[in-house]
Length: 486
Ligand SMILES: Cc1cc2nc3c(=O)[nH]c(=O)nc-3n(C[C@H](O)[C@H](O)[C@H](O)COP(=O)(O)OP(=O)(O)OC[C@H]3O[C@@H](n4cnc5c(N)ncnc54)[C@H](O)[C@@H]3O)c2cc1C
Image 1 (cartoon, rainbow, N blue to C red):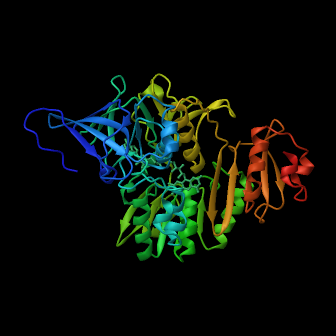
Image 2 (image 1 turned 120 degrees about the horizontal axis):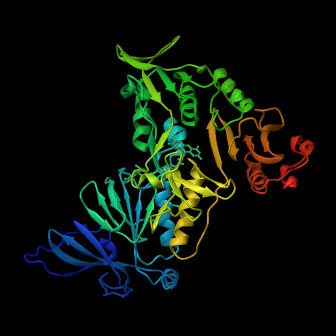
Image 3 (image 1 turned 90 degrees about the horizontal axis):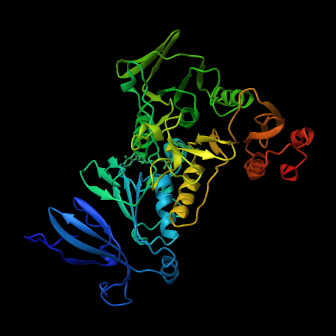
């Protein structure tokens, strides 16, 4: 939309009808103001649009007052009366957590401005298929976007893509974007996720990584041409890519420094079973192997280390992620480098600031500790709880850790955090469809792995949440339904 050209600094009123809601005009500085009521009939006939919010736009030293109009459903208009303060919530990060926060604020009838800034070029999407179905080509990219899909325009959310929040003046509550734009806010939600950890070794620059949709596209295109892929790191992403590449008929070598795969998450019997699954599918799995560097050779690369020389066309570095926590001061960061929060998602010492998703190291009542989870469900639920808190209904969130992975058609779900040396109880032979392996701390169930056994997930969660101490013979007996032990 073209802003009128004005010679002198002045104030003019611009009506933006529903058809012109996208994109919103942004100037050098955007100052929110409070206004709510009926607007002019700018939609050109039909029902009078509801005036939801407005902002002053300061552009090249000219001031405009922009009114944002939107058709509001009666239900939403009613909800809006619950939140009379027309304030601005700025969401940094347009990933899964950021998208869910925005969507929930709108669903709760938040009457102020909701602005979401993301440095990727894409609307919020979910990452799990990037290493699985989308990488394999079994699902299209349209399956990635949030479901149910928010109607970003209709819900009146302002989304800025391809621009990063470069700095925040927490005292003044103003964010500065890489483009130079400045955004004032009342509440700030940091949903900045993380980046793939770079391989800190000579030749690390030859490696590709997998965190974003663009990474996945690049890897997929490379796999179409390549015959051989070397994967450095046998964690979740490394093993998922290995499984996908092997099922595409590629020659795959996984190099893992530790003694087992996905060992941070899986107890040794399940890790060993998974390693066997990969080896049976032809994956060359090297555990206990230290990589010292990657070098170019001809058109490809060689991954090197003591007793190690693996030639490949693509080298994927899958050595974890680093949380994007640079927008808060050091004292607001926890031991994993995430942003500390309380159970409501509030960052201590920074009034009006919240963090959620992969970047948040949040107080979790279940563990009596701050924990940072890199899981889909946490990125789904925690931002919704924060949105409700911002809308006046304090909603503490304590995520029961849950993640899943799909490899070679097998589904593995993990509930709880793995504990070294914990006693384990197996239900069925590990790896058989429907089998489980639980671990116990002080006699209580603290977690478990379910193999092709998703139906037991919610019962296992209840057992973990209640620190249940069931009869161990019954726990081990596949003939006793898990739900009867809850
Ligand atoms: C390949 C892959 C497979 C996965 N598979 C599974 C799985 O099977 N099961 C499971 O439970 N979990 C899985 N996960 C984890 C899950 O996807 C994450 O937990 C989830 O994406 C976290 O969402 P988030 O919004 O917190 O962070 P992200 O998804 O990382 O989103 C954060 C966004 O913020 C942007 N950003 C960062 N800083 C700024 C800034 N300063 N300004 C503007 N924008 C910024 C980032 O670019 C990014 O777009 C997988 C992750 C990956 C990468």
